[in-house]
Length: 38
Image (cartoon, rainbow, N blue to C red; front, side, top):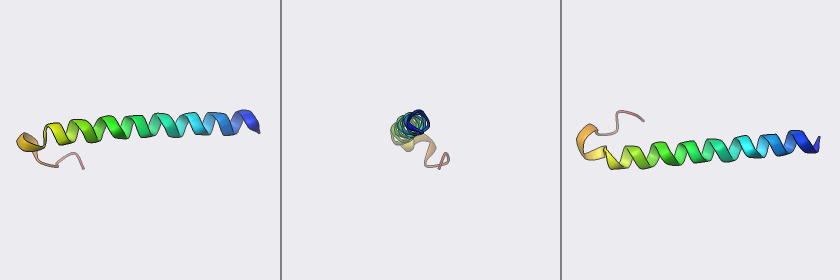
């Protein structure tokens, strides 16, 4: 069970990293493209 919890935690961290990258990229290109990615 410990390894499963660890894998889930890593997956959540990866998802948050990906979300952070998307939000950063979206805010950077907001002036040109608006919020079409949301």
